[in-house]
Structure formats: structure tokens, C-alpha cells
Length: 579
Image (tube, rainbow, N blue to C red; front, side, top):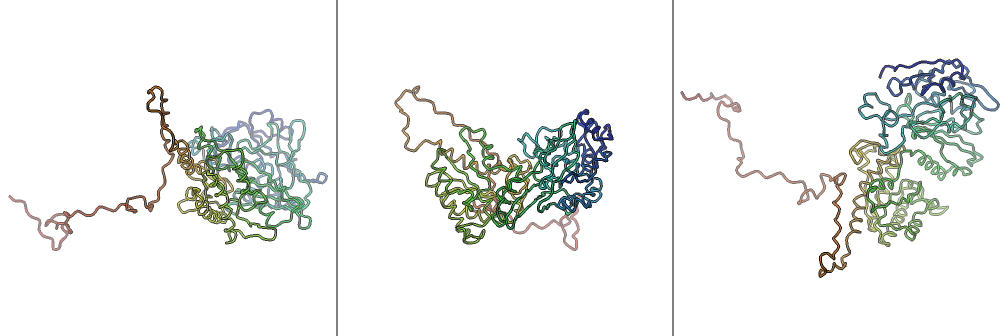
């Protein structure tokens, strides 16, 4: 780490003085416990000319009841949150979340306000100065582009605070001090989804406290991380639930660790329903959809691939959370029929489906098929047959793209089954099948979130959920579909076989010159051919080594006596040169 940069240290005695200093000074930084900002200063991630020390504002470390709300000062340490009786009794999920942050010595210094306002993190940002300099910095600090999403105009660094999602699920408010008084806003409105500018605080504003309303129901927080202590959350989910009998009367869910801000999850579809497999699937889909900050569709990858080709227009008909299992949510067989009879004209159709299909298949209210059972697979195959046949009957080329490997072993196993069904049944109806499995797995056929893009650079290819693509991943997937699109284009450009040739008797000047055929586009990468591919040699195997020449003796000639390679015993005397 680097030495601390030079800065002027300010120690205001009151909150009003701190607000005034923050408004007067250009780009200052605030510090309390220092567990986040001091590390960043030592790494050269921030070089403020002025540092405002808030640790002396003792009126901001109080925990008190104001009306029916519990107010917690922004300077309250996390260690105190874990053991405060009022917090533990009324909001145990908050105390439990505080106890998961870092280690005991960190919690003794770290504060509630600091945990909420902590910097976003990224593998390209949280590095040493010389590493970042060698990689041309990044959009968040001193650079001009985001290395995670190269064409993005915003930073995709992710937020990893533990307390924010709990406070959001509990419906807490942030109390912000500014010149002229206080303002109040929901905790979720304290953040924006931009890794470089993730807080909505104005230059003259300081987070002063958090106000918690009464909890009517239950709340909990779960956190996933590599180690069971110290580590930031890879993902964190908080929920506050109220039930009336078996029915979900109220529910608030928030997430952290996967986006550039902690986010609320839309769970309105669950309200008024009992908790069962159906509502569990709805919640799972809502979480997956909200946690895909870097996710994009295959259509966006294709659109980027053919951005410079005026002959190609990509029409995105993807539908979030849809599949071939649930007809009540979105019936793709009916929608395909409507698309084919609609006003849009398609020269080629690309389908990738199945991410949301690892769930029970309901034939009627009393008859459900377990996912991946024999009966389930047979019905699923029939639906693939219907869709593929619909395009075949309209003479529209269809490319069915297989699902890539996913971070969840269960989802990956299901994807393999869906891929095999699609490969057999869609191709039987005349579709082309594109396999993406190896392109998004490592040499051991295991999931990997990052890998080489179409230019060979190692970038993030998959979203935080381990399911969806980033833009670079979608572009890589599109690379494997490009040959099929170009094949269709070339077929469209070829004249029909019964076309009438131009009149040969007409004078040469009367015949319009044929347009110059554009040079074939050089592919970004050649075809990857396994060494056991039977087309490597005319005989269907690797080329054989040349046979030994007949002029080569079966045994090497014996060494001359006394020569360095003569190992015979007893050793013969070396011949003496002639006088």
C-alpha cells in the first residue's frame, strides 16, 4: 500500500459546522471509524485535499425512541448495534446483520453511517496503484472506460454493504443533515445504480441518523460469502414478512452485493397468496430478474455483432421470466403463431429458452409433472416440436441456441437436459442447433464467470446471478450464431436458379455492370476443431508418421574402438595415428 496522501484534517465540533465545512470545501471526504476510506487512501483510490473527521460529533451516536420510531445515530458502531438491547428486541435482523460484518475489531470502529455509505467495489478498482496504472485505470477512478462493460457510459462496480438491505426491508428512513435543517427519505433513495456515483447525497449533506418504524411481522437477513467471517457479501438478501394465516399479507425484500446499489425487489405478485411452490418460483424469478445488473439478452449481442451491416435488423422478442413450462404466465406456442401471422417479416429466427423451466409443469390444476421426470421431458419435447414445426411450415430458418453452463449445479444439470431435448427435436424439424456449453466453461467443464471475449481479452462474461450474459458474454454467444445468419444472407443474395440471363444481343453499354461483390468478411476467430474430429485427415484420423526408409539399417553401426561412444568392456586401445 501507499503512504497516506497529504490532506488538511478538519474536526468540527457540531453537526452544523460539519455541514458548513462540507458545503464550503471542494470535494472533501468524511471519515468516522475509517475502516473503509483509510484503506482506499492507502491504495491511492482517493486523494482528497480535505478530510472531515466526524468522530467528535457525539450527538450522532445515540439510540433513542422518538414517538413510535427507533432513531439510531450514524456514528453508532456496529459492535454496539450487535449488543444493544433495544435493537436486539425490536429489530433482531439488524443486530444479526451487523454481527456478520468483517471481524470484531472492525466492528468496534466501523459505524452505521460508514457501512451505509461505503465505497462500491470492483476487481479492476480495488487493486494497487501500479496494477491500475498498468491496466489504464477505469471509469470509476482516473480512467475513461469501464473494464467490466467496455462500451458502457457508467461504472458497474458493485455495492456490498450488509446493513442497507435490512434497513430497506424494514422500511427505514434516512435522516440527512444539510444547511437549513434535516430532510428525510427512504433508505433505498439514498443510493443510485451507478458504481462511480452511488450516493444521492448533495455536496452539503451528511447522513445523520436512521429512523426505524415498528416491525409488524418478522424479518431476516442471509449472506453468502467465501469465508464465514471478515468477507464482504457476494450476495445478501433481507426480507420482512407479515402473514395472515397462510396468506402473505405484506412482504419487503432487498438485495446487496450484486448491483451498483442495494435494491428493492418487486414482490407484489406474491401478496395475497399462500406460500407454496408457485409463490417460491415467483420469488426466485423476481430475485433473479432484479439481480442482473450486468445481464443482457442474446438479441443485444446479435445487434452488436451486426451493427455495421445494414442488411441485418435484429428484432428482440424476448420475454423476461418466460419459458415452455408455464403457459399461464406466457404461452410461447401461441405467441409464435401470433408472430408468424403478424406484420413483422422474419428471414431467420434465433431461440434460446429454458432458463426458467426447471419447475413443475402444470397440465391442469390437479395434475403437475415433476421437473426433469420422464413424463415432464416428453411434454417438454412436444412443445419444442410444436415451435420448431411452426417455423418449418412457414419456411423460416430457425437457429436453436443451447443454454450455457451456469453457476448453480442444479440449473446446469437441468440445462443439459433441456439442451439435449432441443438438439434432438428442434433439429429433427429442420432447425440448426448451436452449442454454447464449452464456450462458457473452463478446461474442466466447470462454470466460469470470466473468460476470453471475441478479441481474446479476459472480461466478465456472465452476470452476478451466474445465469445471464453480460454484453461481452452475449457478444461472444452471438459469434457462434453469426455463421448461420450469414449463410441465410448469402442464400438470399443468390439469384434464383430460373432467373433470365441478360440479353446477350444488346450492346455492351446497355447492360448495367454487375455490382461488385463485397470481399468476404474476415472471421473474428477460426473454427475450433477438436483433435479427435474425423475430418482432420482424409483417412478419418490424425496423420500417421512416415514409414521408415528401407535404406535405414535395423541396427546402428558399431562404434569404432576407442571412440567416445564406444562403451564396450574391456575397453579396446584407441588406434594410433600413422607416423
